[in-house]
Length: 283
Image (tube, rainbow, N blue to C red):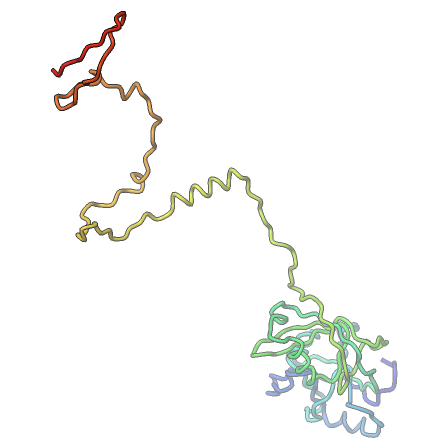
């Protein structure tokens, strides 16, 4: 832990904001420290907000940088936001190492990655994020922060911070920081799985759709205005197959019969083998 002189370093018990009814802490990354911590840093010529490093005692790679809201915590304890307790793998009453950080570089760029596509689907997510980051004093590369919007918590990974430095953290308090959005973790840009159907299959589906079409079931009216009493035909009776014309099936059994009303032929005729003509009388 002998990296740089910070003016304050101690091992404290950590508790969530909900445990001490301090839910206002959940809107950023500011914590509560005991008054004794303030007494040890007052003599430092601190420029800008006070920044502290929270280090896990179980994992050396688990750390984050935070600001301080108040020095009102009970002695030997500190209070952190609920989302930070979970993100860092802490639990109520566990020991963590807290040390004062003299200075952090002013942030220039932050690359973030939301966990859910639902966040970027919000109206103007960039403005929402920028508004919530005003409650954050600093950001640490590799940590996961939480943004609450309309009673919904959205987790966001801090993928990279610039300028690059050994602490992998930057101060964003009163800084002009550019935010670079990455695709959400659950984002799926794969094209839809389209199945190409054969022409025969398409024809079968079209035929099936025609069969399922509903036959007209409304009320018909005759030309004379009287209601119809005839029942509607069944769908199977609407269309009957037409057989090709067969002259053998339609021949007259006794040939063409002459009726009495039919007119007799009155014109002239020619007898074969004779040039003379004769009139055919009416029967």
